[in-house]
Length: 547
Image 1 (cartoon, rainbow, N blue to C red):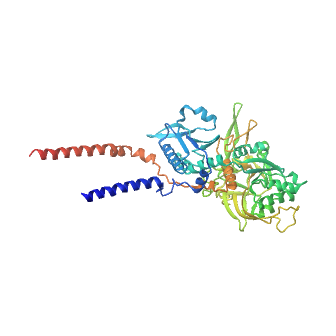
Image 2 (image 1 turned 90 degrees about the horizontal axis):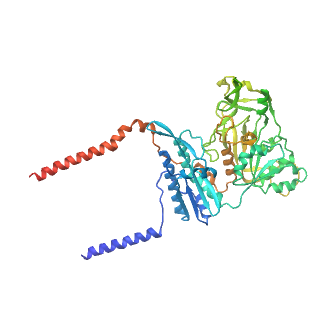
């Protein structure tokens, strides 16, 4: 009896000890192979900076396709992981059906999905959005970002992979009181504000923007350089006028003093408007006097135009019906459609990026790390300039054997220590800020200025992501936003876009084809087993009690 009491006492003490440990030591274990529920150090650091309560409204509630229930579940589990790290986070899932108009006014555009059930197709509307509120600040989170996904299953995979990045980016925007500054360079015939509106209005939500002219270099170069070094990033968007040595030196020293840069440069003159108006145009080299500057950063932008059989469409009048002109959208090989590098955070899971009359980039050997971001298909052709480009050539059937120049580099990321282009040369002006080389720095060079140029519709800037004629969607805007985020990201936040999650999705066609079989397995077999059990039980019972 004493031994039994001892065992009971030890068991009781053991339970109390385990209960104490469970309250004193809290630990969650992620047993998934891809560690999908492990919050990164980047996200944890952002959460540590938040002192106030965080309220999150998620509008993934109600009736929607079964596979998107998975997105709801994954979002719930992710937010539970955030709450485990930061208990001051509170979240709730809200059915948006009664507040649709209010959500749309606040910028939460619904997504229309195609639902397949029993082999039949129907449409469904969902609001894949979350709203984060910290104090008086509010940030929207898209839970279904645009991507190159061709199926809803692939789109769902991309959405789940980006969950941590989407929430971490929004929380970082809320907590970041000091906005980084971006200089939009002007003075050399760069794109006008109305043509950059779609891009700048978006990045202006996160960064401080200012137009910065290099004209003052001629009168006060030292002051101009000092003012430029107050910025974190310089955007050079399609300059059309030659740079002076003083202007080049100013940009060069901005870079060696740590400034990031985004170059979008056309080395040819090729204007689509004159092509439409006159039916042909002369494409010829444009001398911007930047070759030696970019050469010192180990890149060179060439003058030959690139044609690609994977190209965007342009509208072309092909006839008349009554008094109405009839238009067709035809492939225009001078407007390549380019997929991004799937292995880099900037360009992963993007819709194709449209180029217009682009040239190609060569990289040179050296210590700088070069990462291709945008590369054409293998079916390309180089066209030397000067050369006439005729609109009627669109009607000619392309000969695939002529498009044999292979993949062409159109956009590249450069990372490392940049040497000044004026390291061993006479300086255009003296400055106390002169540095022969930079510390570790980053820049992106793109061989097309029109990559950032939005169209104009009825006198107003059109969305850079959409073509106003064809309605086709492009990845230009998201690519450039990702590029700017990457160049200015010191925390490694954007690298979360490279997170990969393995999701086992249902094969709908196979499930529909084998529907009857699995219904029998799930319904018929249990009933049959139950009937068999009843028969055997009654048989044995009668046999036992009949004696």
